[in-house]
Image 1 (spheres, rainbow, N blue to C red):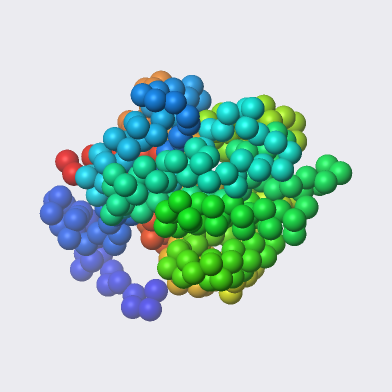
Image 2 (cartoon, rainbow, N blue to C red; image 1 turned 90 degrees about the vertical axis):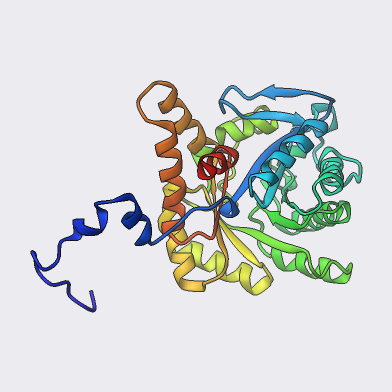
Length: 333
């Protein structure tokens, strides 16, 4: 430390911990509803909410129920909702062409949200996995996810979402060069104010299982994996290279995914680049905390809020979390 602390008893670190007001007064980090992005799963139907067994308390919502939920979240101070589609199996294909359909479930949801809650930001995932029969994030040729043709497909998907009213495009595919290609396409089409939040450091992780249940891609992916394009969990310096590339290609914000096992990456990214940095507290992290709380092993409120504050301490400007509404209610007292 630059200025050594005077020795005990001149320094008593417990002085400022004695009371609630003093602990709040010297808190180094704070969490507010404005730090939260709420990921929500949407599907076709009307007045239809379907439980996701591997994510207790999380439901797939039809668009009408999504609108109601979004209004409640916005009134709690949550600024952005992130949409993920559960696509009907008969609409999936090898090339994921449903992603370009201007009337697909995501586009319907975007338009409904912008009509009902225009001041709330809408973030959309850009990747083909919910729309493909093979469950991969890009196009597959001879068993390999090909890069450049996938980028062309992702551009079409991104433009489709932006034309429906999406505010933040979030490419989660990890194809090389996709941020620059999407940014150029947005500029050419006149979408100069559309933000890009890049999944810049997305790791091939075992924590994604419940999410794939939620969007219905588990059966499509089968025994395959995504290690040829998502990052190796052993690597940290590589994450900084990925983030630097995406910033240079036009990303406005970057994301680290998963969250809690990769807080060191969040800290390194924020310290190195100073760019708005986000983390995704993914489905497996959510499921772990819920399961432990249900078994009485952990106090749910305490560990949820502690985990979210940990992201702030690691340098994150915001967190995508399925606990967003719950946390916002807690913060409001």
